[in-house]
Image (cartoon, rainbow, N blue to C red; front, side, top):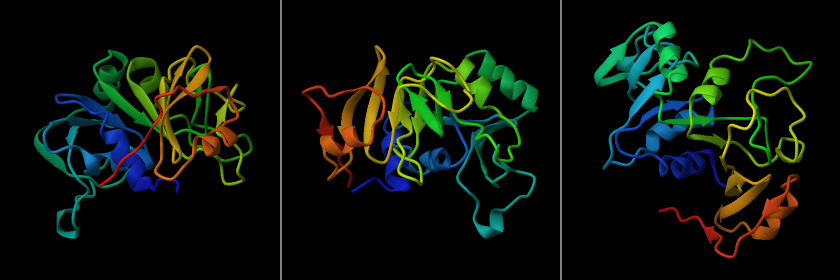
Length: 219
């Protein structure tokens, strides 16, 4: 069966390391905060000016002035810092964010990402994604393997306007975990109950299947 949104977030959280400064994009990436391993400490960064985001607030903790970049109310951890969005973007552009998790509409075999615009649809702009893909070395995309019409989102070449070029090396979908190298998606892990053939069928771009592909394990 394909992974749930929560399982996708849990699998990506396993990539975090102690001491990381982490930026989580809007949508499924925000759920990663719920699965940070207990034995590590990371600081969650928001491009609107907060370093040290805590969990989503309970009803009695809600502060309408404490929001993340997606305008969701959040809390702050002990030791958090609040500053201007200009400083937040300076951190991103200066390469001080260790790990970034982004959603996407499309990713291709050259590591290009299209995540901000569907032609003909009303959009508010690119947001911080352009800076994140340019300023971070360690980016993982988390998204469904196919769109709502069943079309693959893992392509040989992106068809939508690019957010960044040659910047993505890891992709986690509801079917598989893959790395991107040498003009191909390299299959590393499959979701529980999902066959390699399932992944091959739903991947439009070149897919390499090594001999050591494993199945993800969840508690």
